[in-house]
Image 1 (spheres, helix red, strand yellow):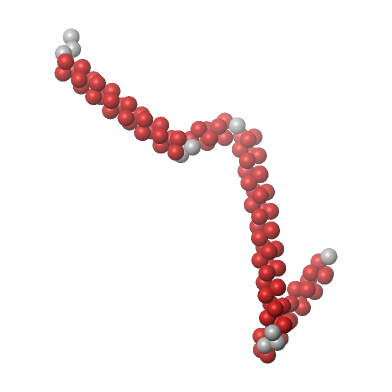
Image 2 (image 1 turned 120 degrees about the vertical axis):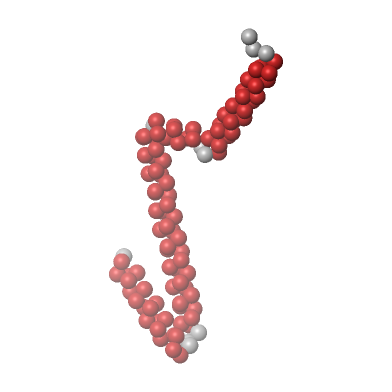
Length: 106
């Protein structure tokens, strides 16, 4: 039937296939294919996942913007307190505008 050469060739082909399949499985694990398939099969979970991510990004942007704006206003008031002739007047106007907007916004 099949001689030793044919069996060796079959074993070599099988070893090659096992290596190929193992490589594909490893790449699929690295690409998180299972999680993507799970999200595809369960659209409600995907919707909730995206909604939660969007909410957290929005809150983070709001907090970050508030902190950066507060820091800028603080630095501008400190510069205005230094009483530099040219910069001081411009900064004082900006601080007055910001404070007026904050009072009107309440």
